[in-house]
Image 1 (tube, rainbow, N blue to C red):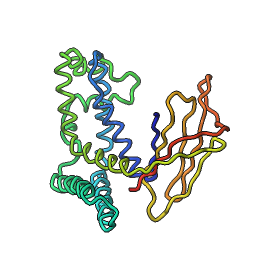
Image 2 (cartoon, rainbow, N blue to C red):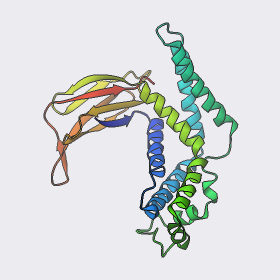
Image 3 (cartoon, rainbow, N blue to C red):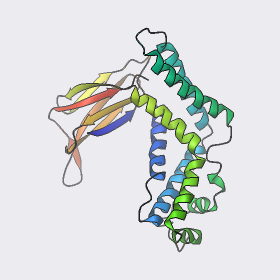
Image 4 (tube, helix red, strand yellow):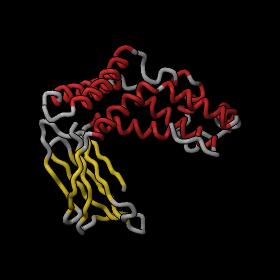
Length: 252
């Protein structure tokens, strides 16, 4: 099944973007070690752009506090699995404590990496990460793959606090999704949302191999989905036939 996700608030959108950058940073080290290093340099500098936002830590703390408050409300319901809920509350409380205790800015270790700083100044130039422009990169690209892997691992390790916090929030949001079978009669689908407790995420599952994909729009009150067909010319057009899909809405 193919999965598509759409955030219904800016904080969730921020965390999904960060997750995508972390995924590129953690991409497996294959035979093209220099290519992997260049991709990691781009990812690290994107992460530093996020880390330069002073509100990033606060956004993460506020989101975890929101989840903790929601879990506290759920705990009052007799229908809730108390043991499972306590486990979720423990994970959130533990991450909140770590974020409050460790006040060092996110990405601080990366800011002292000369190769990352030099690459940062070249990212806006087409082909700017060429060996001829960055001797330090040429040096590292000729090291053994194991040495490059160790370097990348140290960069990832320095960001674990941020990555684990973002991963926890998104995991909980995804795990709270309730799924149902839905149909877009003419390639369009829309539904209202509860503005007092809107979901953070809407998801769609489609069978693999279909020649169309969903385009989302929406906010706190309503969301819309238009299914677009991919054409051979590399363009898209609105699909005007019925589409059956699985719809997931988060409870958080």
